[in-house]
Image (cartoon, rainbow, N blue to C red; front, side):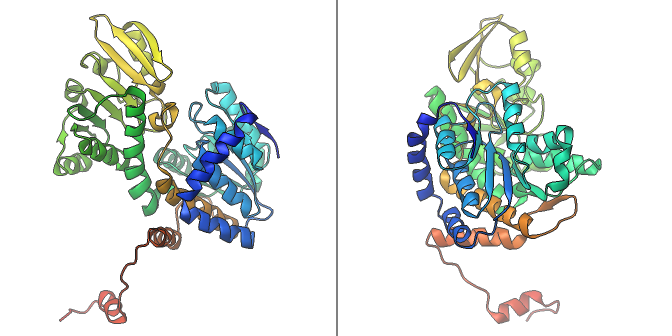
Length: 417
């Protein structure tokens, strides 16, 4: 076991936090027990590039209980929680990462994970997968496959596969129903506002919140903003999603118009240059800017610097930009993923990541047991369904089953009478 963390003496604090999340991740704990008993991952080396925080460490411990050697690093230079990383290292995981990495350190730590010559990769945003294809191609022949956590990463991998550049199979965990319907919607919605409110100590009720993008993450953010008493405006480029947002009760308009009303603007598109110079120039004094997409490219910070006469940090997580006319705009967490890059952000709730990381653990098991051709695959339906059933069971919920007569009726093409 090896590690490179900020301060290993933080491990006791991190262990307490890991124990807390374990109490709220019953599905993953059940899978962990199965793994402990059967050791299905014996002889497998797993490399992961995920946000290093207590829930992710618990996934690593689950895989280790299955017999795997596990090496982990963070997928965002600002999202690692140092006490959790230290705890993971002290519990036997190979951990490389600390909060406030430089770009160079970030990629060095991914290389440290790859130095373990993993058989299976777990990625969040696909940086590790791309690094293998660009710089560590000698590893490709031994990689059985990978799993990808995010919408952004899957989009990139599908483009890579279309161009014939992908060299091993990848399971698109984010495409599982038990991922996007819950993690993206309820997890992102709650964790985004946990971070914004914790960082700013602002009241949401009575504010106008502009949500850029109405995919599953945007839907969750808009829903939570509405529940907190905000007026919500949605901006979209997809006509079907825009229509859906309107039917859900939200105002829909072009971003050039929406920014004039925004007290808080949140991006959740996965795309570049969603908010640029022309939007900044039309914003209200005091507007709060936050990003809940994966990369720090949605809010163009360089444009914001260019049009400002000065900017400074109010605290670790808030930058104030003063424009020539005296208006002040406030950027949270450097435009990075606010629910983890902000020091007040703790990521999605444990109960949500219980579902997502159970999918990850079972997808890794599937990759270890099956030979797949190169391509991007959905999570097998039986895994998706099993995770849902286990979660319902853990919540004490029982549901009905179809009778044989009902099954026959639904499978028949003949007219029912």
